[in-house]
Image (cartoon, rainbow, N blue to C red):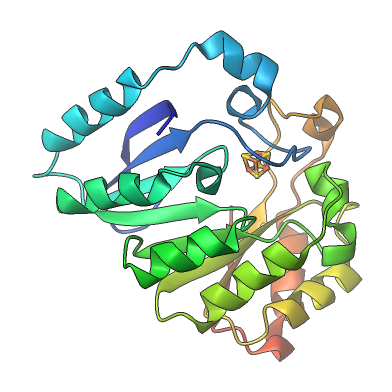
Length: 234
Ligand code: SF4
């Protein structure tokens, strides 16, 4: 596994549990609001000069934290672009940790395999926008079938999971929220995430302002869609 960065201690990535967060390198998408462009854009990745040695250091670190950490959160970049993700998860679990996977959902076959083999304990999948408008966030025009399949796999699994959308006023509309609500009908958990300004992949997106009252309005709007819990994450 190509590892770009390790957050050695997080109390918020998996609430109420102690976790570390490992960032994998590379992504198939180019989201305008991405806060990790150094781990996504090939020209910036080349400058990081990441080697397999980072993976060895990561496992050496985990072996010293078995007394403290409960969860390892794998995010990116997009972890499922790496063919060795299953083996990576298996090694983490063999050390006694639970695994949370953050994914954009582009690789349903790998996702299904990880869930069936019980190599992940929790999955968080981004829903960037309505299927028709996905490309306006991701910067990539593609067949949305893979993402739709990932939603179905997660919803029909017995695993703990969440869907989540980073919402931006002016980019997402109330009509979009209804459409996403239809897609997620019956899901266990959905997080409406506050947009964070900062170093974004597309500099034009650094100027949008967060609007918490809008998130609460959209939380109420989702009540007809029988989603277990709709949270606002700020
Ligand atoms: S936000 Fe996530 S899915 Fe989008 S480009 Fe960044 S790492 Fe990839």
